[in-house]
Length: 429
DNA sequence: TCTGGGGTCCTAGGACCC
DNA sequence: TCTGGGGTCCTAGGACCC
Image (cartoon, rainbow, N blue to C red; front, side, top):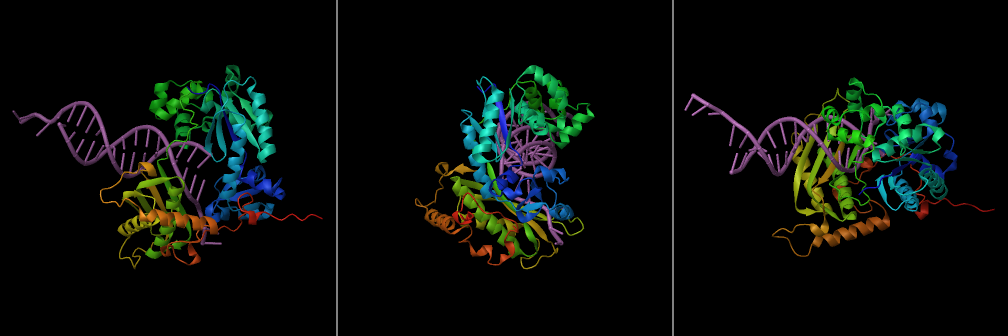
């Protein structure tokens, strides 16, 4: 049985807010945080949003704005954000018996049984600000979708002072006609278009759509959304983390990859990282897919997308196994003889995806497998060395020694919370 | 010059089987 | 001459999310 009152708390401009905790000079001024490779803006402060900087805007498209308004630009610092996320959810634990971590900056909270939900939420908002330094907003409702609607309303209307409660029917009657369908959780661009063509523009109108019609127009997902808008919860509260099904490590390359060895260096780095991720989660993978492709933003240049899948038998989380599989895939998909790139392709992105994941303990043994796995000790040593001396201290030679595959991260802030050497020295006088 | 990365779920359609 | 129907499993691709 799920809770009959659900809250969702989300952090405002989470990456920017995290940076501001440790660098107050970022407060009150426009700030953006960039994606990997410093490619585009993935987080913006309110001031940056006010300048018209859009989510996902390529940096080179907005460089005039950045210069003209003195926008502060930061590379993403996921170590910091991950740690701040943990601090915020620790506060949530004090305000709800059940917390579902939904994303790095959002948690669902079981809000059942609190006498004054709004006061409780406001206390939570103040406490997160005090203990973690992060501003959050809370939406409350009888289903996840209505809680999300409430959260949207709290975000967009300062009048709510960071908390909006849609549990009450009469309040829903007043507010749902004011929520556009495009703002509803689970309704994206394609569905918005279909709904509008059918004359459905608001959350209240969508709520009134017959379930069968919703299913025909969309899928079972839209049907669930309609039910949830009516206050009938269909999406479970998941406070135990479900077994993950796949994982991926993919990157755009700073410079175009023009020969097999360059592609293979990137794939080696990604397969290595993927194997590390598997080991941290105590998992093995049964399938590996390697891909590489040219840039979709250069339609005038020769275009090629390559992707191959290999079975990992036995299932594995060993760096050498994964790199070998990635190599087989890359080679099978390579156009022309290895030494030559016959199409003159400039590959812009490469990645490794893993599927059929299983906890190590449940790994099926194969007939000819040695009882003691030689490689696991090697992998433990590898992880320990890289843990102690820093990422990529020890890598496979295949990854290459040249700096060409290193990510561009020009504006990286210090790892304030996880590296003692990064903590700024404060001089007392 | 320079355009992110990592997930989940659903559906349709093909292959295969009896 | 007549040329089924129903089930499962798998995969690719779409849509959506943050």
